Length: 251
Ligand code: SF4
Ligand code: SF4
Picture 1 (tube, protein in one colour):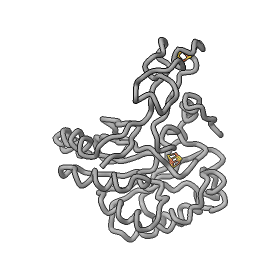
Picture 2: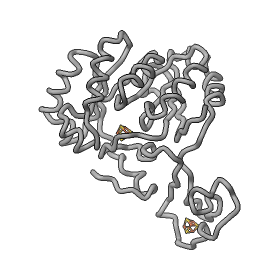
Picture 3: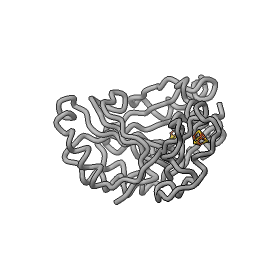
Picture 4: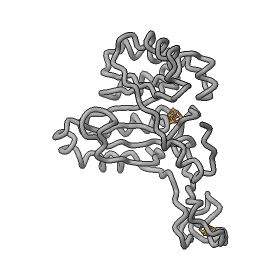
């Protein structure tokens, strides 16, 4: 089965227990104004352009015969200044599992494993489940917003050993305002997670003046209800990749 990823990060120590390899999947139904992975938002591969190196020579627009350049309208190999890269690649679950399985001994030594992140992994739920079925007894973790229907959430979560479940904003209107979607599905899925018997942690991004308000933290603590919760510092570099994708950072 094919899926679309935009990064594989090895030797990660912040994406779950032990030393981990994190696979970042493309596509997310949310549009959090603070998102620091804008290349994970849309499902398809995208051009990233280093505008500061571009001299406007238009060599990349002259046309080429490379099939891989066709979707982008420019030749991704021609820039003399190395301005153009593609974020996102389609990958086969079997090949990806083989690559990940090769590090099994390292994962065992560090008590780590594989983390599936994004983007939102639930958007490629069939691919994720297929990939996990092909892993060779490796510890697995998922980072998710929890924004999906109940059936998909249960099906995907049941495959994993460890869940990192985001909670951003408790108030529905605030959630819509800052992420573009209602939090009802998320809260519904969280209620199931709390009773599921899965090992999990809640993760709250601390966005100044948005999610870190006293009111929101108090309301979130009512949802988390004493379960383990991590508060994640705002990434001050969050906006740096937007310009390369031709997007505007909203904070
Ligand atoms: S070839 Fe490179 S430098 Fe020239 S216009 Fe294209 S991106 Fe800019
Ligand atoms: S859920 Fe995560 S990946 Fe999706 S927009 Fe929000 S911060 Fe970005």
